[in-house]
Length: 290
Image (tube, rainbow, N blue to C red; front, side):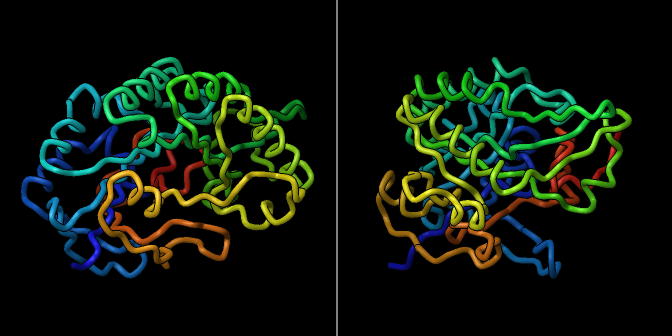
């Protein structure tokens, strides 16, 4: 019997926050129609339990997903579910359209109670540094310790992080106020930040992973226990749910930069399904709105 597939929903937009009715409609139809964002090639992705091993949801806001009972509906249909939940510090100009931090923490607790904490990975992503008009600098790490303590109390043991990627289109976006600029810290600073993050979560029995940070990870001291992440973790999914999955790396991701994701089928669409969080640092947002 051939291996089943993993559906990624999605790196390209926030489906749990904005597009669950569309998602469930496609599940009922038994397939997704998707478009490769690089070559525009169209393809059909099967969406039935006999073809799909696990659905991996990515989101910053699971409120509609939880309130709509979509997870329970999918589980009754025979699907396994896994959650990549991005919970960053409260920062209204970096992430203007997401719920208050306390709400997001409650959502994480609800997912853990319903589906088990082992099915939830916490993404603190990305770590951002910036400078203001008065010359002062800041970052979005302020609530990291608080979030870690809360999520660990729910049983979540995986924290995945990365540093912001400085794409040209991000630097050209309108900024929330004059004089604001993103800055890319030097290697020593990145190493110290990761060491501090690790020392913060270890007492909570959490483990820190990095996403696409091969260069930084290779420069870490030998005694570090930080590992490279697989945000689509097929080995873990197989351990959790049984069955058979491919362990092949996803060639469509940034393997050279350290992406450990294994093969999956991403069914999100950049242009047709814009993300309305409008995060200032997000590479996936095609809209440059103030």
